[in-house]
Amino acid sequence: MKKIFLMLFTIFSVFIIGCSNTVSTSNAANVLDSKVDKKIVWEMGGHLPAQTGMEKNIGTAGLLYGSLQDKYIVVGGGANFPEESVLNGGAKRTYSDIYMLEDKNGVLEVIEHINWENEIGYGASITVTNGIYYIGGSSNPEADDDILFITLKDGKLNVEKIGDLPFTLQNGVAVYNDNKLYIITGKQGGKGSDKVYEYDLTTKEAKELAPVPGQASRTQAVAQLLNGNIYVFSGGDATAYTDGYKYDFANNTWEQVADVSINGGEGISLLGAVSVKLNETEMLVIGGFNKAIYDNAVYNLGTLQGTALAGFRQGYFGADPYEFNWNSNILIYNCESNTWKTIGEVPFDAPCGEGLILIGNKIYSINGEIKPGIRTDKMYVGTILAK
Image (tube, rainbow, N blue to C red; front, top):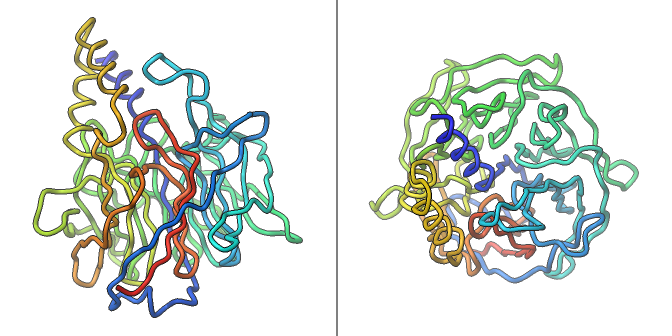
């Protein structure tokens, strides 16, 4: 059992993610309205520059991400394998770099590049009107329970620690509501969990709420606040999930909602995906590991031995990105109709653990993992249009 646990831990150190509850005061509200059929036109916005001390940025996943003043894109931290591949036992590195970018006619230019006092990655990001919360997510065990708040101060990036969780957090998700943070599942205290906590930003106190149903351990899910309820979908552990749940604040209860699927087909895993809030009734999701391939990999990497394990590892980690069949559909969930639909596919390798930011009718996909252990440094700009 110890060996299987270590194998599963290795898998989850490769499959990384974060999530956000991005709030946008869009000047393109007619396009983002739930009654408008949408499409996205994509273009390449450039490459994220190298981290401090590195010659090249090979891309990261598990990023801090969000927006400031409905104008600036903020991404930071994340992890990659800069020296050796996962197949060859390469060590994972996490970064302290935080970048502020601005969209200059479709090209993302770095306005400021700073380094935080700790390396960060795998935390939960939430954009609110006056800043970005970043919860947990650090390779420094002493900082893995931090709650950070990123703002602009005198035109410069300002990072402050504003509180502590009563546990460390990685691969969880979070939303903001009424001056409270809601921290949902993930690895809490180093162990996969179904627990949900309310953190009061005024009193600095955390209170445990009813857990998310369905699974005792749920990591790398997606979540948003829609029509006054928290919606949580997918995630996984030893297998990938496709289920969804809605939280009622008044009664501290959960109820099941539609599984993630389109056109009455098989369930779609959003394990590793990232979401943004389009309006009060809709969330948009990009990414997600293929359930069948992920489940098979976790099983084989945890049970095979000797030459059989070596052969499987060689084939698995040596495969091309397209062979993993990650979810390339751009998905939208509508909480009023309790339905999922797709508005097309991303015209690039489906990413997991990227930074996903919405500003007006522009959506930005920054870096992310494109196959287990391999990231991209590319940044994509999508314009949401009426179909």
